[in-house]
Each structure stands twice: as structure tokens, then as C-alpha cells.
Amino acid sequence: MELLLAILTGALYSAAFYMMLRRSLVKLMIGLVLLGHASNLLIFTLGRLSKYNPPVIPSDVEVMTGIFSDPVPQALILTAIVIGFGIQTFAIVLIKRVYQETGSDDLDKLISTDIPESSK
Amino acid sequence: MIMKELSILYPVFVPFATAIVCLIAWRNPRFQGWLTIAGMGTMLFFAFSLFQEASTGEIIVLQSGGWIAPYGITLAADIFSSVMVMLTAFIGFIVAFYSVPYIDPGRKSFGFWPLYNFLIFGVSGAFIAGDIFNLYVWFEIMLISSFVLLVLGGKKSQLEGAVKYVTLNFLSSAIFLAGIGILYSLTGTLNFADVALRVQQVEEKGLVTLASMFFLVSFGIKAAIFPLFFWLPASYHTPPVAVAAVFAGLLTKVGVYSLIRAFTLIFILDINYTHSVIMFISAFTMTVGVIGAAVQYDFRRVLSFHSVSQIGYMVMGLAIFTPLAIAGALFYMIHHSIVKTSLFLVSGVVRHLRGSFKLKYIGGIYRDFPWLAFLFLIPALSLAGLPPFSGFWAKFILVKAGIEADLIWLVLISLAVGLLTLFSMTKIWNEVFWTNEPEKHNDPESFSGSPGPLWMMILPVAIMVAATVLMGIFIAPFFEVVMNAAEQLMNRDLYIQTILNMR
Image 1 (tube, rainbow over the protein chains, first blue to last red):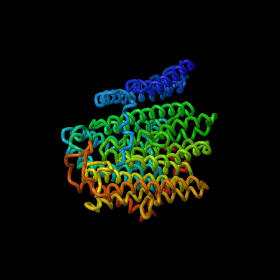
Image 2: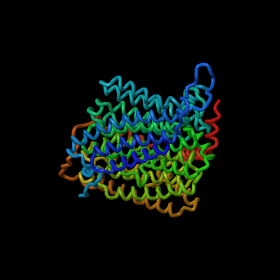
Image 3: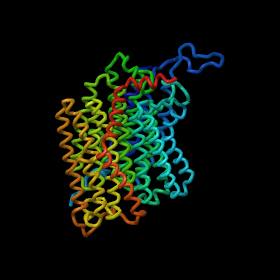
Image 4: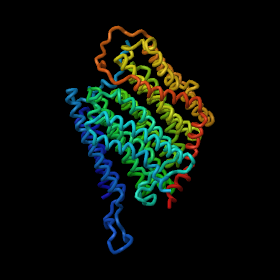
């Protein structure tokens, strides 16, 4: 299972970077979304996969017994998903506005903020 | 006792509260503005009292919800954190005052003030986070507010700059998350102190160094170090000056703060490797930034590229890694926030008077407004590192630390970069203040319409300029504070024990 998830994470990362290196704004956006998923899956895999009990203490005992899975990575991923979702939503609106304003979805054309002004 | 712990929360809570009230009073931007100024003033007061408590050398820790250290979320303030929170409040207060006349009514009625408060909230929160994932969350609060502040107004250049800013910062967050995942799998904890303790027991030391590189790249993008800085000069000159001033003054400092925190507390197992990497990065950052500035002919773009160059100095202090060098880096952070913010604010005043940022369209300021020329000249010379201003001492401490550590080549680079900085500042000085005002003025992005009263823009600049002069003349108390902070940072056992032995 770890091997499968590791391959999947790697595939997501490579797909994300490939898409981000394309010139289209929409593909850049898809790349960002995939990148977020890849990171979340990486945390999930690194947080040890297990088939044990959920980390819930029964009402009649004081402490947890037996082997249980670690809730922290899941909490992290949940937070990261929500934050990533917000940023992606913002980014989608942003690329729409950029397209409306510049009439192009070619990243190589968005260079007006990079080239220096001529001197005189 | 309980009051003492809560004192860490007040300076962070105030901007949050004002942001909420601003959202409620959405239809009344004028009220929002004055509320923000009042809020920042209150925050400055609380930040100062936090600093007073922290400056005794005791680390103030708040275990939120009463959960003992590695299990709950820890907020911690040592001298370094409290100084940075105070700096945030100071810059926030000054720029809020400046924003009242400068920001146009359109932006104000679309939520400038709540966003500004949330930005300050995120920045100050990042400085007191005692938990890596908590730091990530503060980063995101800061980033999302900065995204919206950057595009607010929706001009073409702003949107283009925002594409680059958003993409690279999202990339940075994803790398940060991956680093958190790796570190968690190695140590099984997220608390800074606990991670720092357990990272020494990890058997595969190579994996720790691997994780450290994730953090270096992620924080490096935020701090804008070489070769990860390209988003900064592409975006910082697009929003209004008041926004750019806060970004340049505070946002990159959060990246530098996180770098210093991580590489003094957690990743010190393989100093020969990690800190040499940082050292080369710092040399390149200084040089590339200042050369990039040399070819720019827009007031704000010159300043943006200089930010990159100056980040190199702060990282240089971290790379040398002696208490004196760290103290130099901290002093540089404070000095640079104040000086860079005031230079950006001056560029806004110049635009108000002449209607443009482009050096070729402006001139003759010295003849018409000599006082403004001095308000520019002092921070510009301070940035270049001339005595008696704060920049001289910032560079002096770093150079002294470098010589003591036998890093002559690094010291020579930093001094050469100082000279080139002076060159860029002279360029602005000549073009803006000494040449005659050009007759034709056809800047397509020309500025029309009058912002508020001029004195509300001059007064904040004057306060900042006074701060850099005072920091230069009365260096001793400031140096004592940063030296104590640096010694506290280098004494990591104290931090670890204070946080883990609570209650």
C-alpha cells in the first residue's frame, strides 16, 4: 500500500510540475491543484498507514489501549485541504480576471511587470 | 501568572478584533480607517508590554486550551519574537496612518481596511507560533490577505504581478507542507521545541538534512532569497505604495524570521552543510539583487530589487552563525523594515506631487520641496550603510562577525554590495531630486485626483526617518536587545526546556 501511494504521490508531483511549466494559465491552475493534492497525500503516507482502530477512547475507560492510528496527519491534511481550497478558488477567479484584462492565457505574454523601463 | 501568559495573545488579538469590526462596519470606510489606526496603536502598546516581559530573558509561553506542550498548540514569545511583534505593530501603525490619505476611496470601500488588519494579524501571529503547523496556518492567513490586497483595484499590472506572486507562494506552501510531513514522520511531533529535541535522536541524519532543505526552499521563497526571489520584483511594484510598503517591510521578514527560527533551533545537526548552502545563497542574493536594481528606472522597482539584496545581509548573519552574527541579522531586520518602508512611502509622496513613479517623468523635487529630499536622503544613506544611521551599525555588526569568523570573501562581497546600493540610491537622487522637471509628461499610468492632506503622508515618513536616525545615534540599547535575543536563540536548551517543562 505504501508503495502504491508513493508512486501515486510521485505521479501527482510530476504531473503538477509538468502542468505548471506549460504556458497556459489554465494548465498552471490545474498544476497548482495537483500540487496541493500531492502534498496532502505525501503527509498522509508519511504519517504511517495502518489498519488499526480509530483513535477514539471508549466512554467506559480512561486511556486508550491497543494499537490505534495516528489522528494528527489526518487533522493536518484536513486543514491543508481547506486552506488549499480557499487559495485555489481565489486563483481561479484571478486567472479569469487576468484573461478578461489581457485577452490572453499565454503566460509568456504576461511580462509587462518584469521588463525594466527604458531610461530616457 | 495568568495575566503574564495572556500578554502574548493581546497584540495578536487586537488586529483580529479590529478586522472583524471593520467587516461589520463595511459601509463606513472612514470609520474603519480610524478604527484601524486606533487598533494598531493599541497593538503597539500591548506589543511593547509583551516585549518588556520578554526582555527579562524569560520565554513567555501560552499553552492554548491548557494542553501540555507537545500535545496542544503552543504560542511562545522570546525576545526575538516580541521584538518582531513590536516591529509589526509599529510599521502597521505608521502605514495605517499613511493609508488614510493615500489609498483611494474605491479600494477602501472594497475591504482595504479589514484585509490590512488581517494581514497584520497573520504576520504577528507567525512571529509567536510555537508549532510548525501553526506557523503554516499563520502563513496562510497572511498570504491570503496579501493576495487580495495585491489585486485590490484590479489593474492589469496588478493582476499580472499577482499571477506570479500567487503561483510561487502557493508552491512555497506546498513545499512547506511536504517538509512538515517529512519532519512529522521523522519525529512524530510538530511542536518546535519537541521537534528540536527529538530530531537529535533520529538515526538517519541525512533525512533531517533533506527535510531542512524543504524548509530552506519554502521559507526561501517567502524571504525572496536567490534563486527564488523572482516573484518579488515582479509584483511588489504593482499595488499602491502603502500596500507595497507593508509587504516590503514585513512579509519578507516573516520568511527570514522562519529561516532563523528553523536553522537556529531545529536544523543544527549538520551545520557544515546547511549553513554553507545558506552562506552561498546569501552572497548571491546580495549581489544579484543590487545588480538587478541597477538596470531599473522606476522608483518602486529599484526599491523592490533592493529588498532582495538586503535580504541577503540578513541571511548572511544566519549563515555565519555566531551570536554576534545572529544579532547583526536581527538588527538588520529591524533596520531594513523601517528604512525600506519609509523609502516606499517617500516614493508615494513623490508620486502625489509629480504624478508618476518613473524616474524619467519626475524631477526638480529638491528645488520645490527640499524637506522631502532630506526625508529621502536619510533612509537612502541608511540603506547604503553610511554612519551615523542605523544601516551603518547593521552592516558593521555583520562585517565584524564575518571577520571574526574568517569569512573575508563574504565580508568583501557585502561591502561591495553596499557601494552598489549607494550607486542605485544616487541614481534615484539625481533623477528625482536634482534634474529639472521634464516638461512633457505622458505617463500612461499617470496619476490624477488628489489623495487626502499632505501632512498625513509626511508625518509617518518623518517618524520612520527619525527612528532610523535615533537607532543610529543611540545604538547601545538596541544592540543590547538584539544581542540578548541572539544569545537566547543560540541557547536552544533554554527554549526547549521552557516550553516542554510547563506545569
